[in-house]
Image (tube, rainbow, N blue to C red; front, top):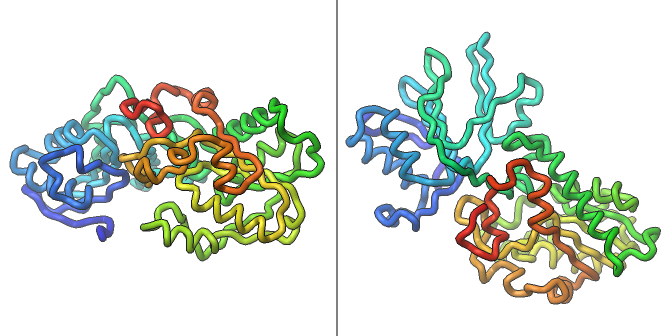
Length: 364
């Protein structure tokens, strides 16, 4: 495994590097000998340093050669370089406290909530921090951006923001739209008194609470996360995912005999939800209605989200909600549309939606 920061040496001297993102190795034929994009980046910086005069020239070449997706921090003897890919796929923020000569960088802007308003590193920018302060040394001006939409859906803390959009506000609006979708439905919830709303922890709760308020059905925190089990979708195989999915949640006794509306952020392989429905039914829950706060995922992602091959994606096997209902053994299942998601986001034409698109050549 590659532990960060990684230390190396090139023609300009020793350096340390921290990397967030994913560069698809297969798109760079000369570099397909690597099994790690981090090793590919380091080897590239080392070899190509002999063809450039300084770090600034080398990093300008790097940002034009590798399209996406990456945020890099490179500490050299004299400077800290901050680099973001020209498409701006992942968030990167910073604060500067000039009085104490302190600079902090993070992909999560919420850690700065007790400080000054953070600034965002924009796509294609290279910043240099040294004894003279922080300055922009390069700006790759691309005419369009493709910010990862999954940052809003799942990855970012709800208190963070990305491209001037507060994640919490985004999830609140999507929760309300899910509720409106059910309110307008003629085949659901004829008697709301018999239902409660629950979220799949942790992100599902961000959507479940505004959903509950909009549809006027009480929200209850009756499903809690087992703190001993981490994210299951990034485990190495389905056998491990099944094992940990059965251990992932703790149920409140008040769930027994209830009709519940379960809000989850996304549906990828379906392993977690299938196990959740099975365990809830065995626990004594009556009806289970699932609402997904993202569209069906039909394409894998090669830019840093662990979305598998097309074959593994549950919607490509059961590409019909009735078939999915039968497979998951739930009473109903509904997604939200990509159109509704984009209606909430500013600069919707700058968002990467490749995983939801019928045309895999489209990324926004």
